Image 1: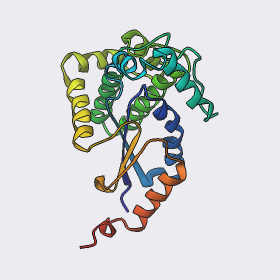
Image 2: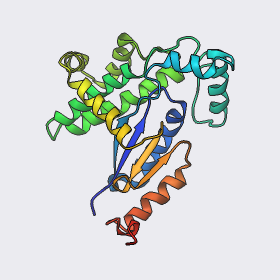
Image 3: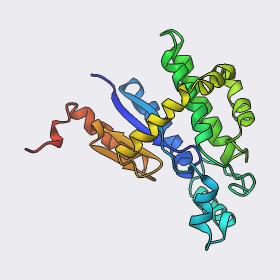
Length: 229
């Protein structure tokens, strides 16, 4: 049987996606090569400062949002969050780290078969490093220098990343993600899409819910059970 494809939309600055990263890892641990997780990006914090100012203006602004994020983090002991998150620093946009990561995905896509697993591992490690860099270490991951420093320990060729950004390739890749998220009516981050788009699992979902949906697709791999007429 072919692996069950799972498209995973997230925003790198989303606290819920940071929390959900452990569930993504557990999917791979439990199902191994029986699932194929494709990371894609949705723009939730594309204009982060304006978004927070507009949504939290009457609730304490950035300080109010900081308290909100810290309260969420307390519910999940597997994540650590810097006490100054969203105050110092306050990244301008998630589009910048998404663009860097889109370039890494292009590198993995174009890699020779023998190099592809390492390139994919570098992407996944860098994605997690970006999330941790912001939420745990308090780094402004919208800054190129920060992105470069976080990626280098995983063998990332940052000159190759810069070249794909400079020639527009990374922009095209990221634009496709954002457009497909819009067309697919992705509500936010994180969202898991399964069964050729028939199932969209959005928000703070427990691992057992994800597992049950994947096992059901494995039980009926054709997806015919979704059509009653």
